[in-house]
Each structure stands twice: as C-alpha cells, then as structure tokens.
Image 1 (cartoon, rainbow, N blue to C red):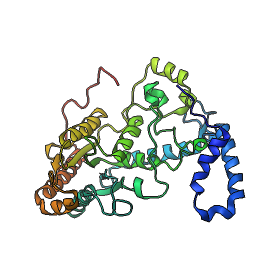
Image 2: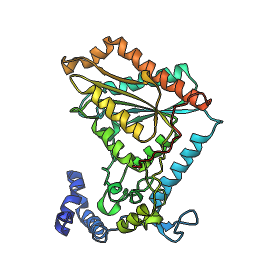
Image 3: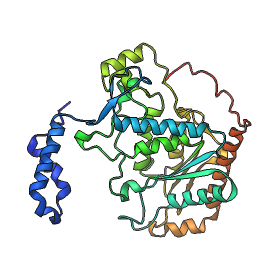
Image 4: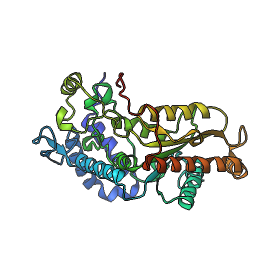
Length: 350
C-alpha cells in the first residue's frame, strides 16, 4: 500500500489549518514554533509520549504502557465492579444514535433523541433502575468530541486488538479526543442497553457505526497489551495461534433495539444491530424490546416531527420496549431470566 507519510511542508500546512481564523494572525510566529514541535512528534512517531511500567498485573511488568490506556483500563475495571455490585440498582444505557441536533447545522433535534427521552422518562417514572444517556449527536455538535475509525487490528490477529482499544489516542497523528475511552465503561457498567437509530441509506447512522466498529475489542480483544508488546503483529499472531480464548467482555448483558425510518430499510437495520449484539453474546430482552417502524412514511421531512407527535402508537411501543428491557434486567438480577443455551461453549470461535 502507498505510504501515507507527509513531508514536513505538507504536514505543517495541514496542521496550521486549525488556525485559519484571522484572530490567530498576531500569533503566527508562535504557531510556527508549535507546528515544528508537532512535526517532530509526527516524524518520530511519538504515539504515546507519556508511559509508565505495566506492573505485576500484566504478563510483562516492565513493558511501557501508555498512561492514556492505563486510565481507560482502570475505568473499565471500575465499571465491571459496578456491574457486578448487587447492592446498587441495575443500570440501563440508552443510546441516541442520530447525529442530528438543534445545536448545529440541522437546526432541530432528532426523532431518535425524542424517542430516547420517551424511554428514559418511562424508566425514571416506573422503575428504580439507574439510567445513563449516551447522546451520539454530540459527535457532530461538540468541540473535540470524536470517535476515530477502527483500524481493524483484529483482522491481523485477535490479541493485537486490545481491550480497551489502544490505537487511540495517537498523539503523533493528532488522533486525540477519542470518546470511546468514556463509552467503553458505559457499556461495561450497563445491565441493559437500548440503541435507538435512524436509517441512513439502508444502514445505521454514522455515529452508531463508528461505535459498533470500535466495540470489536469487547468481543475477543486482548486485555493485556504487554502480551503482544504493544502493536507487534508477528507477536500477536504467535499468541493467537498458540491458543486464544476470544474473551466476550460484554457477554450476558441485555439489549433493546429501536430503528425508525421514513421510506425503506428499517427492518434490515434493526436486524443488523440485533445480530451484532447477539454475536457479542448479549441477550435480547424479548420480542417487545425490538422495534422497527416508519415515521411519516414517504411524507415531507419538514413535517416529520409533526408525524411523530401524531403517532402515539409508536410512542407507546417505545415505552413498552423500555419496560421490556427494564423487566428483563430486573428478572436477570433476581435469577429468574434464563436464556436456554447461554452457558454452552461455542465450538466455532470468532
């Protein structure tokens, strides 16, 4: 493949694009100095400039681990402890998958957000469960809020894909401010997850797809980067071929999926999300927790919120999906929700 490396001139030109506002002109000399430092970090591939020794919890205690990854790892461990703590209420994670909001170009909130609010209000009003909202629209409206694309390390060898992901931040490439290190603990702490997504060109929305791809490390990923000496592909292949157990880090959690469209594709998108979750060994909360519907079918987009206002049936269906997820979570906590075959060993690993 062709090298993506930039010349110093090209790198600096691209780096300084963030300072195009004329307000920065008095600081041009300082910006040039900063750009030179950034260029050197890029030229030296200083992906993780601050590290510390892994310590005795890892296979190679002397390996230099990124402090960014260590913080993400500790957050995931804390979330897992929260998940296992029977003294606190079970937790639901409701995800608004639309990128549309009134805080940027579209000028109004999304229907997905409104459906998420209906679900949240139902849980808050009718149960004692804890609820957390993950509003993926902030990717499009909030400064410095990113989900960088998956680099597909898993396809090279499963142990090369670290749990949580160690590909980001990559300070030398400017791939920073990655939201996933906050999102991973949200998923881990949740006993039930509800994903609400619009249909975008027969697919899930862009934010949902980014999140889905970056959750690959939760399904067979390696929790010990020192085992592969970081991103040593040859070492990772050796580890996998020696026998890898493909740990399912989110197994056993329950899910609900709500997909809405305006012309076509809703059922297929619901299937794609639900199939993905099942593959990761999450369990469906029940038939009422999976829903695909059309709002304002083949009608003007300008009146789509009016169509949602008028469609009281889908609003109640969303409430029922939330109720189904909540009930399943409570039953699972009490030991009464049992899915047949869940404990069987899969003879065909990922």
